[in-house]
Length: 164
Image 1 (spheres, rainbow, N blue to C red):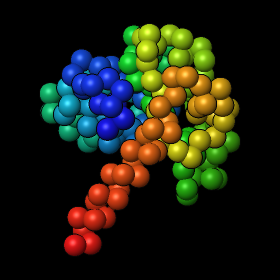
Image 2: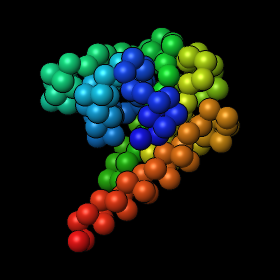
Image 3: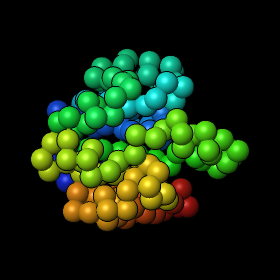
Image 4: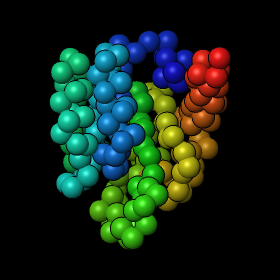
């Protein structure tokens, strides 16, 4: 919803997800493929999106890539997306995850390598200095707060539909 709001279209946009190829990555990858966007997941080895999600996205006809180099991945990107590196239930893995995912956080350097007018998205909560830097989260290219607002309205609409 936020991507459409910002760009007025889906087709031909390049969306790059950085970090752990988790459920957020998988859902975004499939949605992007179905909507005609080019999707790139930049993840370290051991953190790739699962094979089933990759198959579903590719079967949808989308352009889907998984790479290890975050700097190369963001070149020309219209949207940079990330999520927390340590989700609930993974707390015991936190230190290892921080080491493995170092270099995949969205910071000013990565944003500068993206397309002019690129936006940054994060489904929140955010951990500064891990998956996103504070200056990017609150910077001029951040659409994180619009995304949160849009998610609220979408969830309210679903609740209204279900509660009838």
